[in-house]
Length: 236
Ligand code: SAM
Image 1 (cartoon, protein in one colour):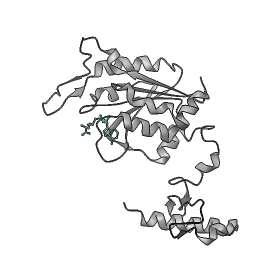
Image 2 (image 1 turned 120 degrees about the vertical axis):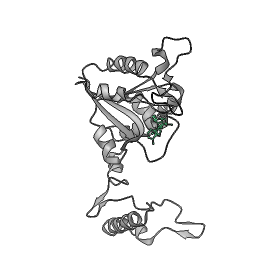
Image 3 (image 1 turned 45 degrees about the vertical axis):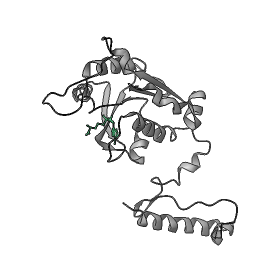
Image 4 (image 1 turned 30 degrees about the vertical axis):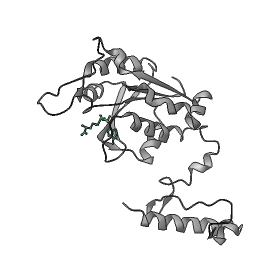
């Protein structure tokens, strides 16, 4: 078994994933901390049009992604990490909502396969079938209560939320400890306190005196108070 975390996405729009070569994730790949593969679902089709969808049984508007190319693509991608349990993430607005805790949990998976739906989504038998396979774990995940055109953007969001938590990806891991949704108080998870940098005065607005005091105890106390206030006042 490898110690590396491997991420594979299956999509009809591989070009959507160009940003994975930038910034923290690009560097993490170059440093060999993670491996990412992007796979074109249409390469699994046999007809000249590369069809991946069909009309829904029962009627109704829109098209549904066919199980056949999905099954072939997932089987092929699973072979890239044959010794691992494959966490198959099916993106859908009907899925479990992404949270920081879920991103943290997914850092434990050595092989994540993201199935990016389009049209009305993927024939549900794809999730149902892999849920019965002993070397797969299936999760349907949503990034929020709204509907996107496809699962690609949702996959980028989830990958980034996970990858930045992996050891060695962020230069100073301490910066992860006090972040929004990680900072815990007796009332639950907090959002982060407000941040300031130079200059001390900008357009008539001053940095709070306590942050200039050099008193680390008072600064920590003020930050916690501010985090509690911000969390309480956050629009839901
Ligand atoms: N007919 C589906 C429904 O009503 O639940 C919506 C399909 S949506 C137009 C096409 C694809 O975009 C979905 O299959 C999914 O992969 C992706 N998608 C849309 N919204 C999403 C969300 N909030 N979170 C994750 N994926 C989403």
